[in-house]
Image: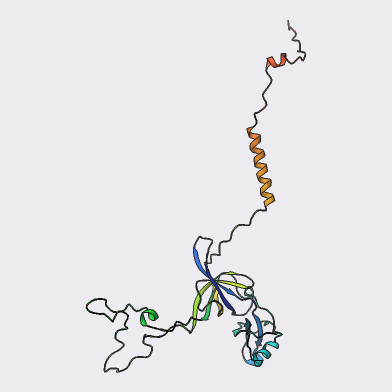
Length: 271
C-alpha cells in the first residue's frame, strides 16, 4: 500500500454486480491505466508533499506542457494533470516518470471520496433543477404547474436572499460524492459501489478517507474443472453403474455338478 491519499482515473462503464450475500449493487468502473508521475513536490523545495499525476493523451498540447512531460521521460503530453497530497512526508515518494497502479493505493473495502465534473444540462426550471412540486392543477391554474411560487418577502427585506433556489444553469460543475465504497481493485481498474459524477471518458479524482468495518466482497464464480478430469469422473461413474447392474455369480446346483462329468467324492459309511 502506498502512502498517497488517492489517484486519478478516467470514468468507464456503469453496470451492476452481485455481492457474496446475494445483494445486487450498482458499480462504476474507473480506468487508472496509463497514470504516471509527472512531478514530485517535497517539503524542502515546495513546502508541501504531493505527487502530480498525468493520464490520457493530449492531441494538441503546447510546448510548455510537452516540455513538462519530457522531464518525466514521456514523449506525449497527458490529457489531465492533477496533484494528490501525500499523507506522510517522511515516506519515500514515487519517482518521476514511474507508473502508478490502483492496487498500489486502494484495496477492497476502502471508503473514498470521488470528485468529477458533472454533465451540463443547460438552463433548467425549479422542478427539474431542485425537485419542486409545482403549483396546483385546479381552480383555473392554467400556467402555474411548474412555477417557483413566491421568492421572498415584501418591504422587509425588500430583496431576494442569496442562495435562493431558482431556475438557472444545471450541471457543468465540480461535484464530490463522499463515503463511496471500493468493491474491487485490479491493477488498472477500480470498481466503486454507486454512481460517480461526469460522463464516460471524463476525469475523476479518487481520495481515500477510511475503511469499511462491514465489507462484503463481490461474488466470484468457482474455478472451472478441466475437461480431462470431468471425462475421467464420468467414465468411473459409468463403470460403477454397469458393475452394479450385472447379476451376482450364483453357486452351482447339484444337478449341474452331476452332469458336469467330474468324479464325485465317495462318502464313507461311518459305521
